[in-house]
Length: 472
Image 1 (tube, rainbow, N blue to C red):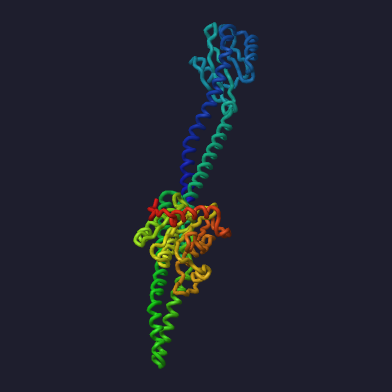
Image 2: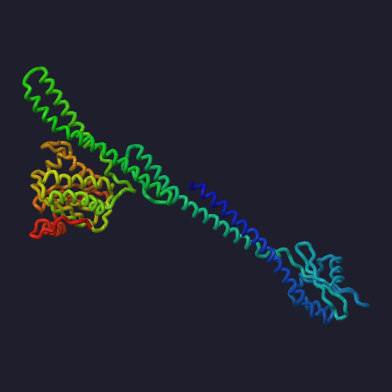
C-alpha cells in the first residue's frame, strides 16, 4: 500500500511538472530570440537618421563605429546616378536577400553562418533604399535559455522529490496502523490475550482497531467467565463433599465403607485441583496492551451503583470518595470491575448486615490507589488471607477474590496490602502503577490518606448519619 501510493504520487507529479515545464521552456526560448532581434532592430534604428542626411562613406563609417557594432553591422548603399553602390562593414547576408528587402521595402531576417542577419531598409534623401544589416549570432539568440531550463528542471525535480516524500509519510501513517493490527491479531492468535491495538490512523483503520480491541476484550471475558464458573462450581461442591466425608467416616469398617471413603477423598482432591488450576491460570486478562485502559472513576461509580442497591436493602451505610474526576488506568475495564466486585462481595459475605463500608480513590503521581474499607470484625491474619489467594486455601475460603485483586495490581507493577481500617474493620489497599514500573514501597498510611479516611469516619461513624450516598 505504501509503495503503491508513492508510485501514484510520483506519476501524477511528473505529469504535472512536464505539462507546465515544457511549454514554459519553449516560451523562454522564444522570449530570448525576440530579445536578441529587438536589440538588433534598435542598433539598426540608430544608423537610420544618419543615412537620411548623408551618404558620405567616411561619415557613415564613423556612425557605424560609434554604434559599437562595427563587427556585426553593415550598411549597403545602392548605386544612384553616377555614384556606385557602397558596402560599409562586413557583409554576411546574400545579395539576393539584400535586393529583395530593397525592392519590398520591408525588414526581413536571413540565415547566415553562425546565426541570423536582420536586414532593415532605410530611405535615403535621394529616394533610394539603403539596407542596414545587423548580425545576430546564435549565442545571443540562446543567451540565458540554458540557465532558465536548468532552473525549471531543478524546480520540477524538487517538486517531484517533495511529493514523493509527502506520499511516503502518508503511506507510513496508513501502513503502520495496519501492521499493528496484523501484529495484534497474530499475538492474539498465539495466545497472548493481553494484545491490544492502538486506536490510531485513518478512520477505517481506527474503527478496525476499536473492533479488534472489543473482540479481544470479549474473548478475555469469556475465558475469565469460564475459569470463574469452573472455580465457582467446584467451590459449591465442597459443602456436599464435606457431608459425604463425614457420613463415610461413620460407616464403620468394611470393604464397602473403605471404598466409599477412598472415593470421597479422591473426589475432594479433584475438586481442589480444579479450584487451584482455575485460580493459577495465567493472568493474561490483566495485561493491558497499548489500546487497553479504562477510567477508574467511571468503573468505581458504576460498580458502587450496583452494590448500593444491596447496601440499602441490608441497611448498610456507604461512602464513595475521590471518583469525581477521570483517572486513566492501564488495565482492562472488565478486570478492574471484577476486582472491585470481589472486594465488595467479600464485605457483604463476611460482615453482618448494617456494617458500613467505603471506597476511596486516590490519584498519585505514578500510581492510583483504591481503598476498600469496612467496619466489620476485620481480618486477624492478613498474611494468611493473602496466602489463601496463592493457593493454600483453608478456613473454608479459596481466596479467589483476593487472588483476582492481587493479579490485577501486580500486572501493572503494583501491589495489594491488607490492614486494619479506621472504620474498625478491614482495609484493602490496591496500588496500580500508571507506567508499569516496579512498585514503590511507602508507608501504609500517609498524611493524605489520614485526612481522607478521617472524613470517611466522620461521615460513616459520626453522630450524624448521612445514610446511603447516591453516586455523583
